[in-house]
Length: 392
Image (cartoon, rainbow, N blue to C red; front, side):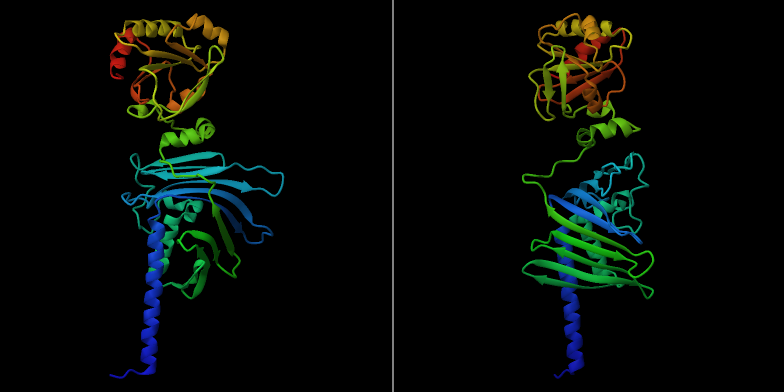
């Protein structure tokens, strides 16, 4: 059977297109399945009529979450403006994990939780992207670059070429919509398929032209991924959550969770610290107190009475958010054996989500919180005895 030369050329063209699409899809799959990604990047955007680009330094972390229908990964992106004059600007961050999204930008902390309201989170794959995809810097992550590559591979408005060599991959192309070129792009990847550089020009040659350039560098030596939780974010950005959060992390969230990290001075001016995940020496009852609240001395007396009544050993920690040592000393009189008195314990209160006083945490020796109690009543000693038993 004989084929004409034009027909053979057509077959070769089809074969080349199929190979390019398959290769791009393979690259996208590799990015999508990245188990742990840590990197730094420089992000520049050149705006219309601007002489110099706006520049940010990025700290990137993501890990694949294939079981999450809302996002292919959990991520944390921190950014820092690179300023070329004496003006100041605030750093920011964005994080998504397990149906929760947080963003701090321009002195405002925003948060969304799918359990409370699913509307801001569009279904995965929907053209109406949810808040977890609208964060501009999150699009620098490999799992979200994968989404872009899959769209390029399947959308007929894109024209592209993928070149493969010993130094990695280079994807070049453009997008045309109704006869107009709306974007031009170049992506570079290393031989393992991880991003090296990215340049995207939107509305090229038009009044609204923007050029975005991203260059990646390695993360600091030893940097690894860590599990993202609400408590972890509070520990990473304590000042932001304390100053800008409107709906606070509550103490109720701590049942069954590890006791958060803190470092606080004792009444004798020694440093007492705990690291989340570490065990405690004993069953520990932590009372977070405010000495300006009425009857705090009575609360201390009830707590001591309960600890003395227990048929087993337990440590009592009296953590005062106040810093007036004289006033605290007057309330506790003296520190007893098996007891610890902390002063200026606002960081402990903040990390645990304490907003009312007294708040009492009952902690197991393995460092997890067995139960909590908030407020004072006439049965406080009995409540402490009953709940301390849960921490055994």
